Image 1 (cartoon, one colour):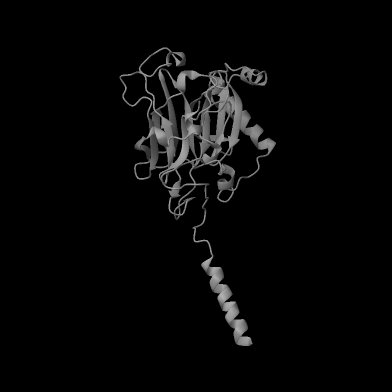
Image 2 (cartoon, helix red, strand yellow):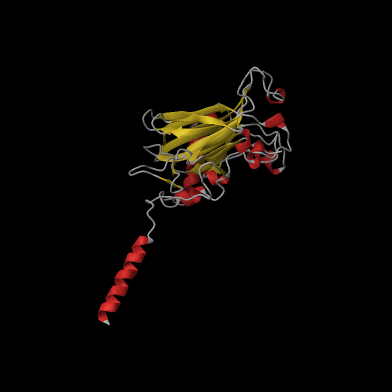
Length: 316
């Protein structure tokens, strides 16, 4: 009987080992992800990914107040332009030599306008800091945080499954937009010794250019690096439009950005973009951009067949 018990235990151990998950540490599995399909990433959350790799220390009211007083007293946004701090967030964005702070600057009246539901709120400005012992060690101007509510009632942005978090009053988001994806095993992962990288996604108007941007802090240059600048389309600027002309998806087994291309040379602001410039051959086409790890930038993988673009992207 003893040998039977021993044999049963051995068999049980073998079965247990055979069922063991062979995924490396720090992996997240999205829904879908089959090659040849376009997969929505709504199953993923940034908090889920960050919780295992970053110690998100709670920020005391005293600490935040101290940083606010420091910036209001010394930063040019306050001293020279008269802006106030609308939003502030303590996070790890990879900048060394100090605790990282993302701050949205703007006029105090914007808060009143938001409460009263006004849509024509002006764009604000974002600045990223590294602060050590209440001294500003590094400062990076990230540019505008575009308010799009004047044109749309809903949020045209990467879906929450892309692993992003909105910030402030505009169209800027931060998240892990340069992650690795294994199509065979269908999960996101980080390589050995690879740190979780938090970058930024933004869309909006730049003069006569409507585009999307992905950018972040680059250790080699000790500066903010632009990973992608691509013109895209906000179709006809209709408030009732419900599509997502730029979204992070898994397409043909790869993780990246699918976006509706639209470039224009027409001056005069957003209301002049009702029709794309017919001389620009790529207008109205969908493209898929993927992260090139060696080049540290997003590149075009291919044009996407219109028939393969799902309805939740096209909208109506």
